[in-house]
Amino acid sequence: MSEQSSTKKDTIDTISELLQLSGCQYRIYDLGRKVSKMSKQDFEKVEHAMQPYPFPIQGHAMFALVFWQKAQTTPYIWFVKLPLDERGLLNQGSRNHYLAIILDALGKDLTQDPSEKQEELLQANPYNFTPSQYKLASLNAVVKRDLKQSASQYYEHCQLYMSGKLGFAEWQGVAIQGICDFAARINDNNNSQLLINALEKLPSEVITPLCSALENQQFDIHLLQAFIEQASNELDRSEVNVQRLADLLRAVSDHSQHPQVIALAQRILAANVSNDLNLLLTFTGKAWGLLADNERLLQYLENVSSHLEQDVFSSVFQDLVAIPTIRPYVLQCLRSPQRSDNLANSIGAIFAAVQNKK
Picture 1 (cartoon, one colour):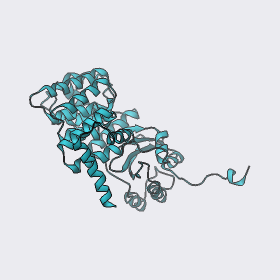
Picture 2 (tube, rainbow, N blue to C red; picture 1 turned 30 degrees about the vertical axis):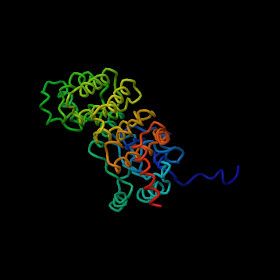
Picture 3 (cartoon, helix red, strand yellow; picture 1 turned 90 degrees about the horizontal axis):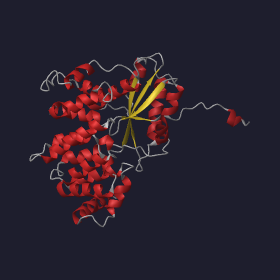
Picture 4 (cartoon, helix red, strand yellow; picture 1 turned 180 degrees about the vertical axis):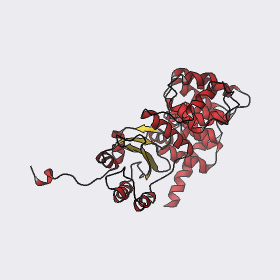
């Protein structure tokens, strides 16, 4: 055996290696467009630039690193935001810089109580970020569920509210964290049926955060159909509540391959509300899976180019082309003989702007 091959590796090159060598149990959650658990294998592939980061936001990847020692009941959570290159691959230099800061501050012992100086180093890490209130609440709910811990103190009150026993007008006492706990446990404790019974009666103050939390969840067909029915009913109204429609679309967005959800998306794109900015951005931000189809994506881009300003169209286009699963469909739309002159002009303006910058 050669001396080189027998030498034990003494460097830490990736976040994955650091977590493994720290002796901690750990999980990775993606915080890009939604809150979702990421397999360790996929995270390692993204870290090694072997595959693009799947859900980019403005050229960045966002993760929650959740880790704990076996004796601990409360995990540590670090939020990491790292830039991507033009191919959607993780910027290796930034990842290395992040890792160097952590190793300089803590070494391999991630769960030690940091000194004041160590804490200053950690806090000054330029790759830290603070998620929105909704994402923090959703992550907290999902982590507690996944680690088989009790939900927050607000969960039971939310369940009681959803049962209708308090009256649906009494929403002020329902906490966002309770709503996220309810959504994370939608498949437990008859919660799905409670929501089916309550759905039509929920005020916007509850339905909006609830749908935001449910965008991260898979749930049973009965609840899915209840959401689709509510959205269909909304589309049938003479005056559509577009915000509620966008909320309902957001709630079913994790079921983008289901035929009934696809049919709903097609109906929305063909309706006279398809010029609404919030509704259109819900597709790109949350329901992008529904645009993984040449005809639907073309209809979507036609709507955006017809009803919104060029700068909005450019932002939407750049957002979609950055999503690895949607990029091939976007590129096909560029060459589609079915595209209108208006859409062709909007696309042309993007490329003209790029050329002018060179």
